[in-house]
Image (cartoon, rainbow, N blue to C red; front, side):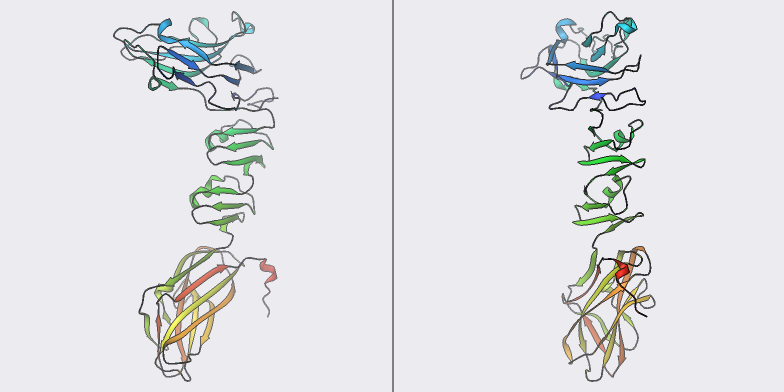
Length: 388
């Protein structure tokens, strides 16, 4: 009935989950004295001497008199232990009692923990706390208590097992298919499937680095990144934004490039780098430019977006710009879909302008109006037909 351990008959040792801090040892409150209190608990303990587990219960807090039972040494300190110890007559112990006991240490200039199994006592014990008793102590305070409780919890077979971290989850011996754990460090549920741990539902991670905490993602799994406000999905190889939008808006006043003629000219402030693209996925590319022209009638200019190189990279979008007037008053927004031909985790895109015909030149301005935007349109790429 208990979560399994390393075999079909062994059980997982641990605390039964519940309110408070089971088995915690604390000093007397509000006024410390020579006693400590052990909080109530129930735990499963797999013995070292046989296979069947013990169900161990302390049904009420237990007060133990430390200094009254073993007064401190006048000049030397010592280390005492509070332990949960299981007797079993099957192994020649005097009875079948569960003991929550005080094990007194030896005063020394370099105190060491005592052995709870000394003198033939049961070897089936779990330490709860170390008490560092100073020379001449008159009270035991919380700063003298070291919490030694093993952190592992256990639940009924088929229950959701709380684990503190990935390390504790990975330490589970022989997890079974369908076993569920609650990651307390991540606040999410994981289920064992196909020899991996699958996060259930939409996990929330703080940053891009947090995506790696999902150790066995399945294709199509969705995760929310809190720092960017984006949802990501697993494409069987990498995490991809569900709807990535990236771009530049040039806010500075004045010319970005001047005297653009028949030489294709890159506009450096509009370069977008580090864009994640996927093969055969559909993207929308939108460019807005504020331009001034020395001549208008009969002039035409080309706008291009190139990938990976400012003037020789693959052209992913292009448009013709026909100025309507002379001066800083021609403002154009152009857009086009693009079906990617490659997967790239850090693609680069550049905007260029070239004179196609006419006698004048162009100047491109920022002024908070020139921009480029690349947007993951999504949808089924198979429905975006390339007509030839």
